[in-house]
Image (cartoon, rainbow over the protein chains, first blue to last red):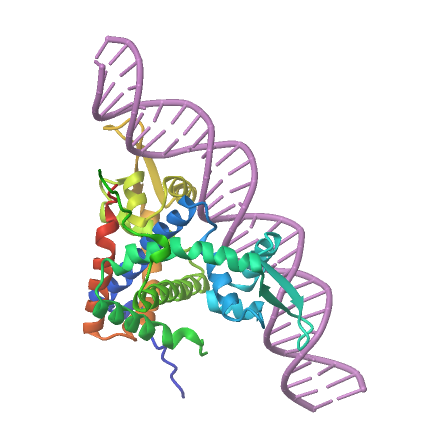
Length: 162
Length: 162
DNA sequence: TTTTTATAGTTGCATTTGCAACTACTACCA
DNA sequence: TGGTAGTAGTTGCAAATGCAACTATAAAAA
């Protein structure tokens, strides 16, 4: 006879107060800072951060372009939302879709000159906000520490095991 | 003659790579973890995290209740989205709105028994996810460190000065 | 007191997101 | 080779969000 014991017995979970605090401050602080950045972009008459994220990824491979699914996983968007985000960018002439030779299902997305220009235009506002929101509050050691903690948190979940 | 020099000259911004890394890892990691938690809640047939956030805040003051604007600032929602979130919760019988004696404009939101029950029901799933996503990756010292860093980041922006 | 200004909350409308189903193609398997 | 399962991407529809305008009340100024 085999007993299967669930890894976590819900009723018995004893989550530490430390973990709870870390979680909630992480969620709230990120949200707070994100709202601020979006507000700065809007105040400058610029599109939302998600546009920048995509344009940045595309600009890293501006010659070859990227498959949509690659963009999606880099910016943590699901495929249908990315599909429609690319629609919008394409409608603005910031990116273009091309047929993919290797794979008849997909397409290659490339950034246009106009897309590169917008990215260049957004960066100063974005950078100033980051400076304002992060670099002015944390010293160099703390920035390193934060990055390392985030890396530790993200790593086990980047590729989702069963 | 008085020279007013803008604090940040956009063209000259030299954002450190450290700050940039800290920013991007913070944004991405939080998003990644949030997506995971939402997925766990949904997999358990439970409502989104935002519902829990509101129910939790209300349960802290379950007798007195909270004004909508108080809830809004605690969970970082703007007033119109909170208004409609409360609508949904009210439609499910999880909270109730009452007229506010002190202030004829606003109302007091109180959690119901059913709301408390749902909150109780969501917590084990939520707690397990936090355990999984945070506590398993960071030790006690790191959790403390993360919380402190978040506090440092959030503090200067909690009350927005001119 | 009267007027003005600010705050609390709601709502119509447009945009965006989430969900599920769908097409088209690739990769694996026998 | 043919069949089956999986992946890339799109789309219709419903739900949620953002924006601006609105009502109603409170607070401040005159």
